[in-house]
Length: 190
Image (cartoon, rainbow, N blue to C red; front, side, top):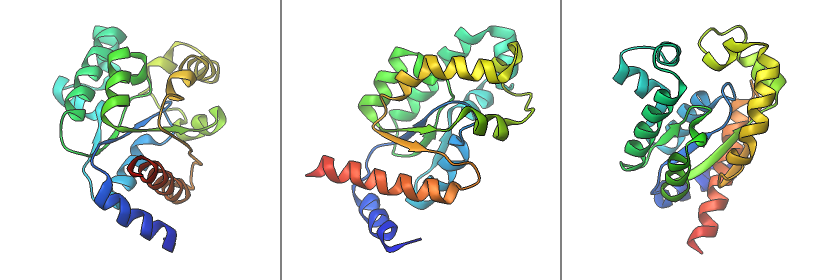
């Protein structure tokens, strides 16, 4: 880690008093980057999908199949609102969390939000033939991802910080994110 990151981390350790919420498409690395960022910031890491799965006692795919997307989005909203009402942490949200206006409003007002973005080609490489992506089971994954990104990009763009996720180069992504968090908070404290 370079000296710039060390100074940025020191500043963040003292000034970051809100959750950091990662938004973005499925497969951009929110969980992976979120875990590493939480470790660097000495904060707990939370994943809204994992919390929903634990509470429901079943996988996200099963929730979609048995109860539908609308019920899943309600559970997602509840989980995100509960987490944002708690102590600072790093939260990885599901790709569609921003579709709910109440969830978006809470993320905007109670956290520092980060849009982790990636190309559709990189997303497809990351998720491979994963069978745990319910929205991709409805047809050609590339076509579906392009349509979802077109619909969701304006909502993701509402995030405070935008970071490009570069696949295997997660250390570079984390370093960029730390510096952008530092710049964002530094501006807010001036």
